[in-house]
Image 1: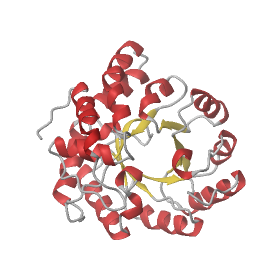
Image 2: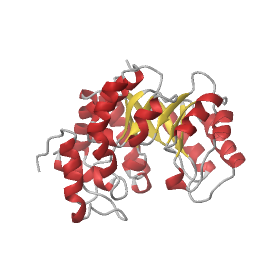
Image 3: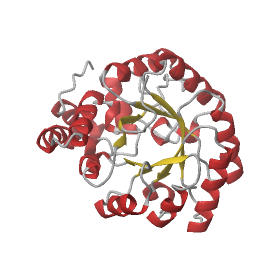
Image 4: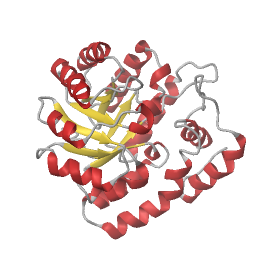
Length: 298
């Protein structure tokens, strides 16, 4: 059985879609196996990388059920439940708390730009409704609101709130979080390019986009960093550096789905308003995948 502590290399997993936009269930099983075989410690299902804005509730429930049953306790299953409405977030937390998952990931509300007190009350309400651990998610580049360390520290003392995925790529941010949050509260990097460095400033792992393509390398890099082997961690990270950048050459998950399609793992379908990777970026993403030592079949 996996540990109850959120650490290591977790993947913000893509949602595989057929060309007609339907979920590809065969590819979903293939991806779960891919991560089980390559050291991933947890799947974050229905996050931004999983195209959460366009995935239906019924589809998400089924993805969670299938991943949970297939993983059979060998890695964490975490589901993205956050919305811009506190009421709907609470409702979703209640729903997925009963689905046998190991935790819920709650992103800061997008677009309505709450105050720090509004953020605290939003997450407090969700945590009170939860029957599983809650992971906060701060990603101001997407949501237009930044949850500050002082607010996170308050929330870290709320029952059920156990971790944060912090996507601000600042080591001062991680130092502040580590200094202000209580012991046992997990800091997870939400930025692949700085995840290794974040491990030296209090992070216990990463929720990764890169791990979709290179799960074994991400797992090895995070394990090395956690064990204090900075030389090994830096060497692996250098191999992945080009990939960290290329997977955001267009909006996530456009490039990562193109790469996974070329690896033969998925068909590469997306739902509008997302579109397939522009041809002018194919060479750059391909070069980054090859630089990481990943084989392509197409």
